Amino acid sequence: MKQQLKKWMPPIIVQNIGLFRAYIKYMKYKDLICKNKRFEGVGAGKKLLIIGNGPSLNGVDFDHFKSFDMFACNDFYV
Image (cartoon, rainbow, N blue to C red; front, side):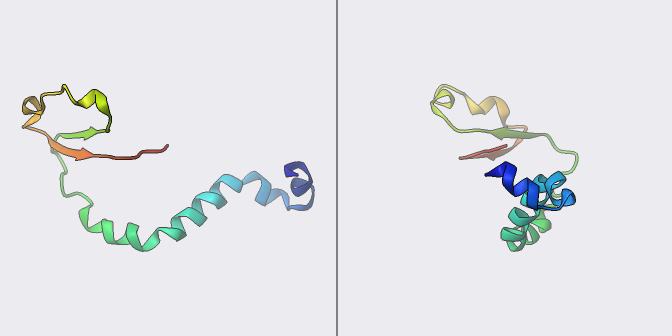
């Protein structure tokens, strides 16, 4: 099916389909992204520790990281 779609789509769209998908996702969350702009630069120059979730964190002593600002993520996809 993808090959047939590529036959009928203009080359500019086929070549930039990833960009197009990213734009659609951006538009879906645009309002939330704009609200988060207020946090831009808040921690400039500070150390930041980004923490993922999972059972492997049960044994971690976070007292060692008191000098860091911390940001925790529940789900993360790249």
